[in-house]
Length: 105
Image 1 (cartoon, rainbow, N blue to C red):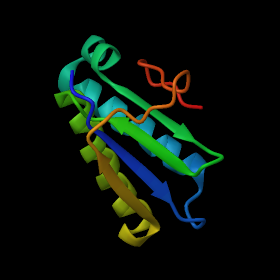
Image 2: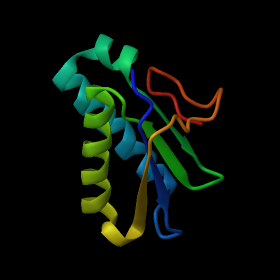
Image 3: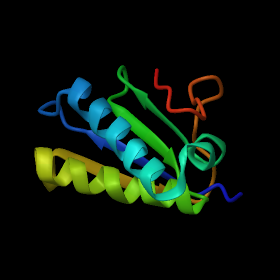
C-alpha cells in the first residue's frame, strides 16, 4: 500500500462537525462501491479538530475514492475557497489518531 496522503485544511467558516459528517458520508459512499470489508482494510483517515484539518491516506483505490468524494462534498457544501488540499507522497497520519474503520479524533 502506498503512502500518498491528502491533507485538508479548513477555514474558520467551516463547521467541523459538518466536515466530519461529510467525511463519514464519503466513507459510506466508498463502502457502496467497494464493500464494507475492503473499506475497513484499505481506508485510513482522521479529522483533527484542534488543527482544523483532515488527513486521508490515498495509497489505495478506496482511499482515492474517499478523497475524491470528500473533496466533492466539501466543494458543494462550503465552496472551494473554504478549504485547501495538500498532497503528500508520504504518510502523514499521526500515530494513534487514525482508525481503519472510520474513526476520527
